[in-house]
Amino acid sequence: MEHVQHKPYPGPTPNYGSYGGYIPEQPAPPPAYDQKSPYEGERFKPNRTINDPLFLIFFVLQLLGYAALSGIVLNPWSSANGLGGGIGKSGGQSGTAVTVNRSTVYLLLLVTAAALLLSTLYLMLTRAFTRMIMHITLVLTIMLNIGICVYYWITKYWSGAIIFTVFALLAIFSYFSFRSRIPLASLLLQVVMDVSKHHKSVYFVAFVALLMQAALAVWYVFTTIATYNQYTPGNPNCAKNSCSSGKVAGLIFYETFSFLWTSQVVKNVAIATLAGGPFGAWYYFGPHEMGEMPMHPTTSAFGRASTLSLGSIAFGSLIVTLLELIKMLLNMIRNNANADGHPVEACLACCAACFIGCIESLVEWFNRYAYIEIALYGKPYIAAAKDTWRLFKDRGIDALVNDSLVGMTLTWGAYAVGIICSLFAYLYLRFTSPSYNVDGSYTAPVLLFAFLIGTLCSLTLSSAIEAGVSTIFVGLGEDPQVLAIRAPELFGLIVERYPRVTAGVPQV
Image 1 (tube, rainbow, N blue to C red):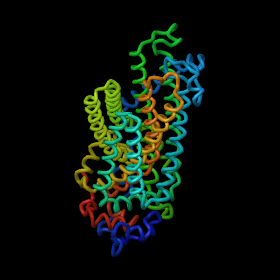
Image 2 (spheres, helix red, strand yellow; image 1 turned 60 degrees about the horizontal axis):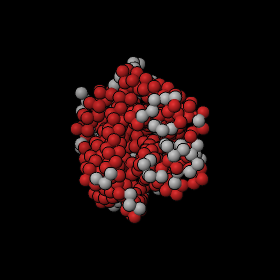
Image 3 (cartoon, helix red, strand yellow; image 1 turned 180 degrees about the vertical axis):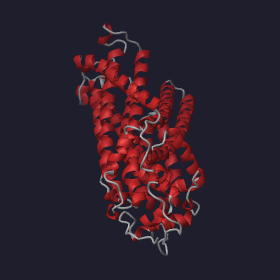
Image 4 (spheres, rainbow, N blue to C red; image 1 turned 30 degrees about the vertical axis):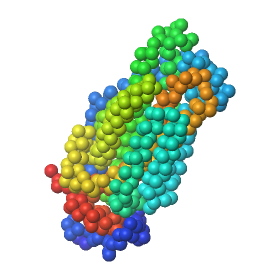
């Protein structure tokens, strides 16, 4: 049966192909073999069973426990008027000096608002300057890192100066080492942005996830501040409660664990929704005008991701959460060593945190492909992870560097948002001098919270774009000839650079 060539509305415009010096002679024709059915292998027709139910139960229980703990600490904190404090310099100095007070809540609420604004602006920048976004974000991040390094060295904030110097060097190295791969990765990003322009549900899902992340961040801020107020030794509430530093540390650890895990699940449900919805439907069924795309693919994908596959998504998210907690503990050890005047221990902890961070990034990258398998086929996490590893081996890791380059660019943007939020928190603490932070003992945790809020908000938005890029790679591995119809210039460039990729993945 003869293939019918439909104009691929989301495909790159002709001048995209010349970006970076590559000018294809003609669009690559579809391969000679027949195109597979979009529903092959139960794709888009998953089994109606709940996958990984134990992790689903564990996730629900920890969230209920977090809600119960939040209610316990927020009720007396609200009755005590947050131990005083307010916004600005006069407000910050009016509260209790024993522990963090209401002024910290105002600070972190301002950080959350700044994270929302910066994340939205970054998404708008990505959409407006698609072809140059990789150069722009990498160069801006290098400049931002250098500026913050200089500031921290001048202000003698040693641990911050060391860690941001390392990040600045990594940013410079990443830009020059990946520069030759930018043309293909940019073309991938452009195709995804073009698809997004024709599927408004991409931005709807991204913004809903972002608002949920912001709400979680606000809830987390209030809960942690109330926990400090409730159980820190020396505060007025200790007359009614058993207070100790160990209890505060344990509760804050659990609250942070719950916040990180829930945030990861929200982000990854959004990834599965987009992969199994607009991006997957575009790749396998074609544009709406072809009349083959199912009705409401985004709604259907969200229904599967938030019910039958929620346990599998929670499973993968838990692994990343545990790695993030280890990294945070190492950062706390580094800060304490730096405060106690032990630079060697601080540097060792810093290196260990960077190592764990690299492992965490690799696991997140791997998990994103597993979530796409979960979204398309409804597989449990372990089965999806095995198929993902087979996809990596058969297709070649080298081509996947282009996907990681897109992810790295968007992650650097999220990292920049987090840095700006932490810098804002640092300047706020420095110029308002709140009563509880006269000796600077609360500077590190406040900066950590600010960085966490800013980074998570931005990552939630950028994950929408990463989901599209990764979905194209999964589709390219399973059914490569489809891409020759959807985006011919992108297919031609991939054939030239990575011929092994377009051979497809052997089915087992």
